[in-house]
Length: 76
Image 1 (spheres, one colour):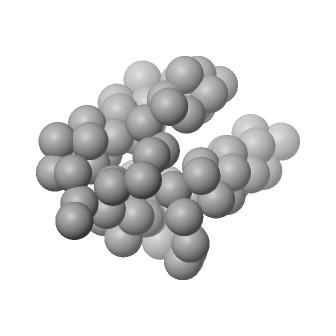
Image 2 (cartoon, helix red, strand yellow):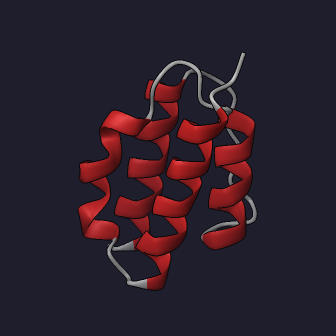
């Protein structure tokens, strides 16, 4: 069962991060990548905001690390 609140909160944080170009602050939302979030929805949001080719299957913690890598590459 997914936590709609946690998923929506994380989606909004990703959208705001893009809006304010605050990718260097990504570490602050690490705690939101918890069991119960809808990983597919988060991946979809990241695709819409950052990279349409981004794909991922796995746990929320693994997703955090993958997004962190993508953002690091983007900022290099």
